[in-house]
Image 1 (cartoon, helix red, strand yellow):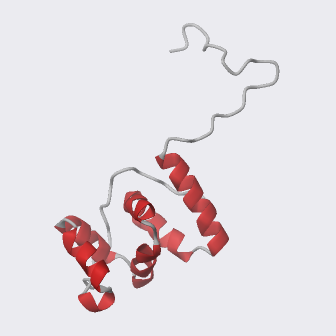
Image 2 (cartoon, rainbow, N blue to C red):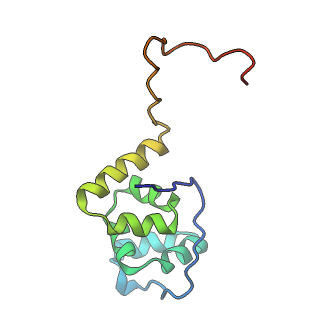
Amino acid sequence: MALAIPIGSTALAQDEAAPATSTDMTPDQTAAYDSWPPDQQAAYDTWPMETRGYYWTLSPDRQELFWRLSDEDRVLITSMSGPDRESTWQVIEARAAGAAEPAPAPEGEPADMPPPEGGE
């Protein structure tokens, strides 16, 4: 699984999606949608219906992270099975939190060894 997880871009390349309407969403979802800036609404409107529906099943924290994914990654995670999707979310959340685990030190070298001089 290779997700590109940029932290920021929400630009979308799809042009043919129908805009969201109040009949697609619950009243609470419509209120949330209406509170978004126009560019975020336009981005949401380009998502496939399955992706739109999946978005509303996410916790608020995951919804925020979902916006940071590329269009391709949003669709990919929407199409995953439950276990694959959950493990992908764990990776996304760890990356967003900066919690990527460092590689273990090679045998015989202390993990807190300073870098070699002149290798900057």
